[in-house]
Length: 436
Image (tube, rainbow, N blue to C red; front, side, top):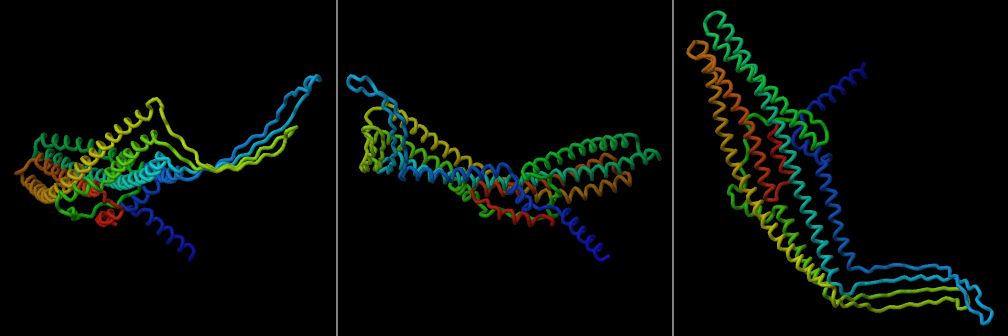
C-alpha cells in the first residue's frame, strides 16, 4: 500500500514537472545545447583559434628526414673480356633542420594568424548575441500568436453570445433581421480569424522548434500589467557611440583591416631576401668495389635574393592594397549599420513604452465602452452592430497591447546587441516578468 502511494506521488510530481511552463532562460539553455547555427559558430571558433598556432609555426624550425634505398644493376668493362655484371646496393639517410632567420612574409603571417583568431572570437561573440535575439524573438512570437488566438477565441465566444441574443430578439420581434445578419457575419469572420490564428501559432512554434531542437511545450507568458524598464543610459548618443566602437561586427571589421594591412607587407616581402639557418646530417652506404659508408654533418646559413619574377609580386601588392581599401570601406559600412541599428532600437524602445502606456489606457476605455454598449443594447438605445464593434475594438486593443510589450522588450535586447553589451544575464530581468 505504501509503495503504491509512493508511486502515485512520484507520478504526480513528474506530471507536474512536465506540465510546468518553460520560461525564457530555460528555452535559451535548450538552444545553447541544440541550435545548429550556434553549434556551427562554435566549430568555426575552434577552427579560427588554430590560426595562431599555424602562424607561429612559420617562425619555428622545421625538421625533416629523407632518404632512399636503391638496387643498382649495371655492366662494367673488363679489358678484352667484355662486360661483366655489376650489382650493388646504395642507401641514403638525411636529417635536416631549417630555422628561419629572416623571412618577413613569415613574420607577417604570424601576426595575421593572431588577428584571424581574434576575428573568429569576435564573430562567435556576435553569434552568441544573435542566439539570444533569435531565441527571444521566437519565444515572443509564440506568445504573440497565443495571445492572438486567445483573443480571437474570446471574441468568438462573445460574438456567439451576441448572435444568439440577436436571434432571440428577432424571434420575439424586438429587433430586425438585420441585427441577426450582422451578428452572423461577425461570427463567420471571427471563425475564419480563429483558423488563421491557429495556423500562425503552429508556424511560430515550429520556428522555435527549429532553434531548440525539440517540440516546445507550454511557455510562460508575461505577467499581467508588467512594467518594462527604460534603457539606461536614457539618451541616444552613448548608445550610438558604443555601437560604433564596441559592436562585434565593427570589431571584426577592424581586425579585417589590420589583416589586410599585414597582407600588403607580406606580399611586399616577395622583393626581400630570405635567410635560414640550416643543419643536416647525412649517412650514405653502398656495396660493391667502391662500397662503404660515408657520413657528413653540416651547419650554416642559406640565403636567397629574388631578382625578377615576372612582376607577380608587384601585382600581388596592388591586389592587397585594393583589398585593404575594401576592408576599410567595409569597416565604415559596419559602423554606420551598427549606429543605425542602435538608433532604431533606442527609438523603438521609447516609442514602444509610450505605445504600451497609451494602449493600457485604451484597454480600460474599450472595456468601459463595451459595457456601455451592452447596457445600451439591452435598453434599446444601441443596436447590435455597436456591441460587435465595441467587442472587436477591445480584443484588437488587447492584442496590440501584448504585441507592443513584446516588441519593446525585443528592441531593448537589440539595443544592447548593437552596442556589443548583450549578455546571457540580460535575460534574467525579462524572465522575472514572466509567470512562473
